[in-house]
Image (cartoon, rainbow, N blue to C red; front, side, top):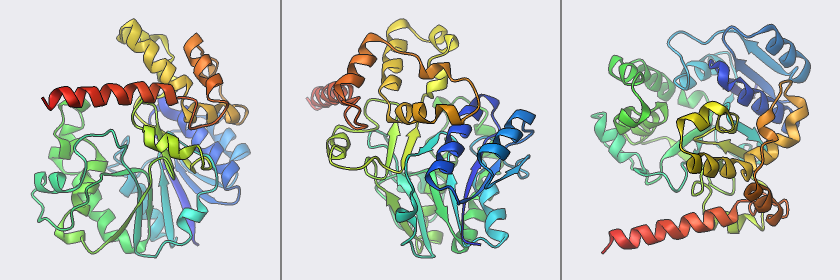
Length: 339
């Protein structure tokens, strides 16, 4: 009982992402053990998992206290307590582009593995989050750990239990009912709580490894999350194992409802970003394996088609001009602010 991949999704609108995650994992790691939590799954989803991901064990409910993204320690703990030596959490908006085993096989038993937060994210690091939770400061990480991928072992059970307890704290739970922009940083999401714990004295002994942005994972969806430097370096590398549809999801951005909530030019801009996203490019190759209609994969604009053509099919080049323009704008903004 060694490595097992864990996924969970209780939001009906996000099931399509879960299907792509599972289909890609099946293609990249056809013999891997998989546990997928999907509360009240439809008969269609049950049949699809049985036919397309026969190595997956479908659990039709979340553990008590788990909901939405606040479920990672809840679902990882039972897997480890069942005897597995290693559990790897995958977000449901991930595509596994190739076998990640080389990244995981050499890990020490006590090594926690996550990914770097996108370089464009503000308020990076663990210290501010630990302080806001009132935790005794320990080791300070300058980069925020993103939990779209999270590798844990039995050595991390105390951390997972502590994390689970804080996610069930009444103050945190009440904050989750508020819009994201109204939440304090340390209560924004489960990821912020984990970063607080990692920055505390209690867990400073843990060995933590960050999967590198651009090399091991691409946070796709915005113009700056997959940075200019990462793109240029990517020209000479294989596609990273993990493609993360962070922020806006392509199956949402191309809906009429999204356009109704945003102005015309913002909608156009976000849709072009998705058209050139490495995640969407990989999703197109998996389309026949997910068992549901995906009209958003057919969406296209003159600019998006042009940028894809200019990228010559390379994952790092297809959106490079957008990132170049956004990087220049960000640099100009910093220059103005510095005056």
